[in-house]
Image (cartoon, rainbow, N blue to C red; front, side):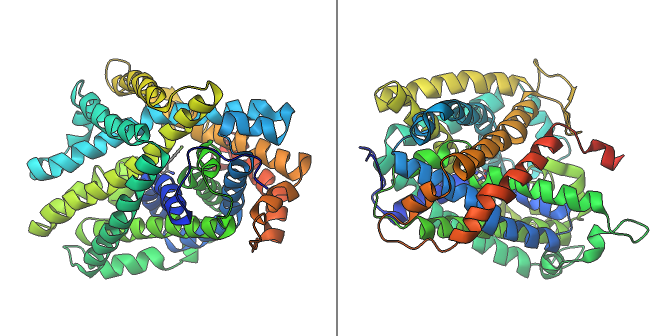
Length: 472
Ligand code: PFF
């Protein structure tokens, strides 16, 4: 039974699903997923990811949403209501969106820049060094970041139903149409180095050799890395363990079928990730070379793709801007959710006015994000992160702290709280509260009590560098 109903709420199930899918579908799907899928050879990664979404991801997502709806509160207050001694977990969870917003809007600004530049200076975007020159320049990244942040803040300022829900209801279907359109175009196209269809087949076909060492034995290290990378991708992609889905859950009306809604959100999120891979991998395969993905690493959509669009000629001039518009849409609905997790908690905990809180959060985030932008020039430094990745700037460090440390720690503690302290029935009661069926109930109990905590411990150990000896 819901113990409390909030004043702000989504108008119904569709509004909620689209807003939550808007949060989930973002840079994680369009940028990180294709890079990871390509790193692990496509097909096998897709299968592992899908299995994890339907088991591990589903359990974490439904837990967050049910905590939100049952307590009617955002993260800070919600955990206190679940169990008074666990209030600290609310604060830890709340810290995650506070960190993420500072760099998510910076990347959002990069996307806006590419959206504009792919119209105004199309040829230049594919030139060597364009991306690095842009992000290391002093003024431009800050200007684009501020525009991105202002749009985000405006939507949050307008409120849950009039802002977030309305925005997501237009943007998400538009995003789906664009991504399907571009994927079909790319798969049907033919480039210098092959056809899009061959690239697509390479992407979806599992190849067991991808997981073998050069001598033909099973590469245990690679399998383990694949699993851990897929799990950490899932956190980020489903927006779990960061208070966002708890906040959105608190805006869901009691009669909404949570089990069904979660299924729809998962499908939406996984489908967009799959489609993003169906664009990036076949496009790079046909017009360039898949090695380019590995070479450009995380910069794939800013480095490898502009090159591909240039290779496509006139078609690229149309597809390029539409692609970046689509990424901008996805990033905006996500950054709106990150800001809402902060604003919603502020309004509730300190009894503040929403509009003023939204403005205050926007100003503070802008200040912090300016510092993140400067991390690429005046404040740049080099640091070795425990994961083995070399962080070269503040953005990498903030991403490491939030994604590699706080999220798995918060999630592990949430699993202990729900699985062992208040017991899974606490969540199950909420899902079944208005006579709805909880279709994966047994799986949920096993996941939340045993499997998810175990996986989380592995992830935390990996983040602390415990498995680095395996790769040496
Ligand atoms: N889930 C979003 C994505 O895949 O890009 C990103 C995201 C949204 C991350 C909200 C964190 C967050 F709090």
